[in-house]
Amino acid sequence: MSVLEKIDSPADLKNISNEELEELASEIRAAVLHKVSNVGGHVGPNLGVTELTIALHKVFNSPVDKFIWDVSHQTYPHKILTGSKNGFTDGHFHDITPYTSQRESEHDFFTVGHTSTSIANALGYAKPRDLTKDKGNIIAVIGDGSISGGLAMEALNNAGDFQGNLIILFNDNQMSIAENHGGLYRNLAELRETNGQAENNFFKTFGLDYKYLENGNDIESLVNLFEEVKDIDHPIVLHIHTEKGRGYQPALENKGSFPLAYAL
Ligand SMILES: Cc1ncc(C[n+]2csc(CCOP(=O)(O)OP(=O)(O)O)c2C)c(N)n1
Image (cartoon, rainbow, N blue to C red; front, side):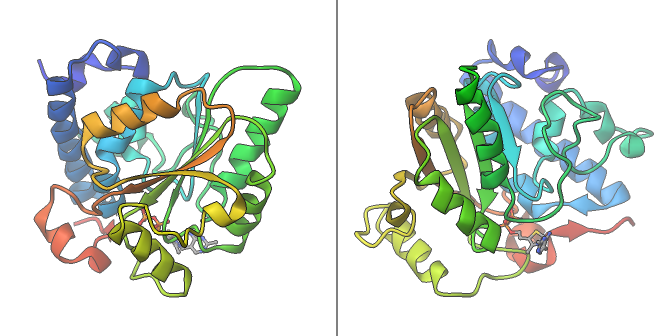
C-alpha cells in the first residue's frame, strides 16, 4: 500500500512517520506529474511546495487552522491531501478545478487566481476570529512573485498593526512566472545570502516578527519551524527558501518554461 492510499484527509497524516512523509512527497510529485502530463496544468510551483504543504498539514489542524493560498495554482499537493486525490487519477482529471474552491473542500476558503491577495484575505479571517474569541491559526501562503503586488504591500502594512495570531508563510523560490524584477528583490537576495540575518530587512520595516529557513524542501526542518510558531500570539513572517520544479529535471533546468504544462 502506498502512503497516499492511507490519506483521505489531513487527520490521516498525524500518525505517519517522518520516513513515510518523504515517501509521500515522492508520491505526490508523481501524481502531479501524471496529471499535468496528461491534461496540462501547473508544474513548477506545485513541485516546489510539496514538502511545505505536507509539513503544514502535519503540524496544523485544517480546517480549524486555515491556510489561505495566494494565486492558488500551487495547491495541487494541498488538494491531494484534502480529499481531492482522485482528481489526479485517470478518468477523473476534470472532476476538480486546479485552484482552491470552497465548493470542493472544507479546507479551502477562497476561489482565487489573482496574485497578492492572501495576506489581506488572511487578515479578513484573523480579525473576526479574535473579535468572536474563536480559535485557530491563520496562515497566508504567498510567493516572492506575488509579494510585490500593491495589495500585498497594503496587507503587510495592516499586519504590522495587527495584535493577534497571523502566520505569513513567504514561499521564496526566486521566481515569479518569469524572473523577478524590482528593488525589493535585492533585499530578498540579501536575506537569503545572510540566512535571514541581514540588518536591512523588508519585513521587519513593517514591524513584523521574522524567521528564515534556508532548506524549505526539508520536511523535518519545516515541521520543527511550524511547531515553533503554532499558536503564536502575534504576526510573523516565515521566509522559506524553496526550489521551484523540485524533483523534475526539465522543470529545474527551465524554470521559466515550466510554470505550466499544456495537454499533450
Ligand atoms: C493580479 C495578477 N497579476 C498577475 C498575475 C499573473 N501571475 C500568475 S502567478 C504570478 C506570480 C507567481 O509567482 P509567485 O507568487 O512567486 O508564485 P510561484 O508560482 O513562484 O509559486 C503572476 C504574476 C495574476 N495571476 N494576478
